[in-house]
Amino acid sequence: MPTIDGVIIKKLKVIPDERGFLMEMLRSDDDFFRKFGQVYLSVAYPGVVKGWHYHKEQTDHFTVVKGMLKVVLYDQREGSPTKGEINEFFMGDKNHILIVIPPMVVHGVKGLGQEAGYLVNVPDRPYDYESPDEYRIDPNGDEIPYDWDRKDG
Image 1 (tube, rainbow, N blue to C red):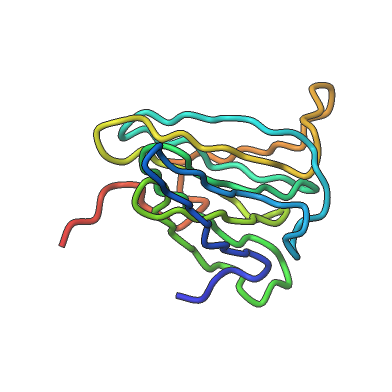
Image 2: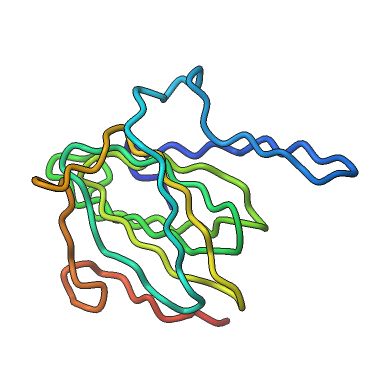
């Protein structure tokens, strides 16, 4: 599965010691870092799907800091070399990564396992309450060719 054009995956540095651990997520000297907008936490309970949505201007930087989430991306961008591609990422306690999600790439998350998944996002712009850059698509509709059900096998 090719990675969607413009999506960046950063393996996170985890520094453990006898007191616990430190995990670096996003640094201003990362080559993909543009600017800071805000930081927020989104929690998904086990089995819950939150999505689909996308932004026309905003770039997201997703990291799961507790639990496990399935993060799914869909490239709907006209003219993109990866238009129509879907990427799945299993992120969190078992896979410490940061994903950079460019504008117009649709994304959603699903809680996995027996506990809530805690996602930290550092978008490159603050949320505008008067004119939100947030566009939603039904996660159970047929606009995006993806089935959120578990795939055993």
